[in-house]
Length: 209
Picture 1: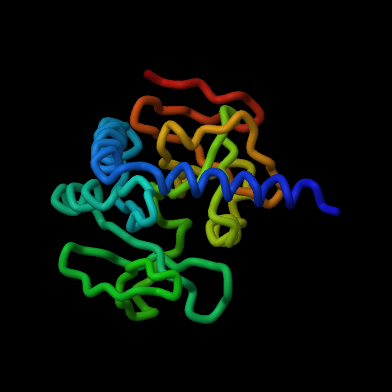
Picture 2: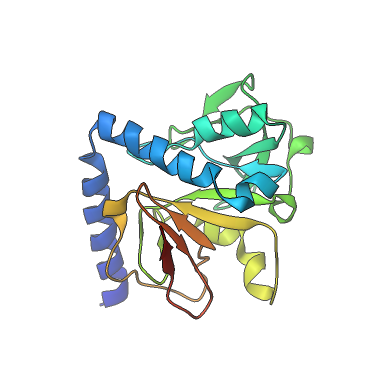
């Protein structure tokens, strides 16, 4: 029996339950707090190309921040499911007027032309959803591996400045320990409503008040 797999499945089940119990009012306030924290970050102000996601199922929603980024003259992107290669994402341009459609997970994504996609290597800042995280900045996703596969190229680079990955989560999504595999891609920073954790490879993260 694969204990690691069973432990991770149980952890995902528990965290989904916790997130489902977050009231709409609490979710709204949490999203506001996280977006305000990100807006104050230097990486946000320096970024010219920013990717986010449409929050669903209790996730912190960064879309108001993307609206603001667009008004600031930044280029904004949203992930779409790769139309050919399973388990991977493309990033395509988004504006407030972009037509949207539901993908197979019932998550809104832009209607796009394949010629519009932008390689993640050329996006400055990418906001990532998370199901859970720990003090070492290990990220637990929903289990599909979309972000891990899409950013696998980052494992083979000793140094890379793009993209800068920022994980977003509720405070209650922090765990004592997240199971970590060699192929997992962790964010460079994690932002919650009350804390900002700067992550350094090989070191424990430090909360930035």
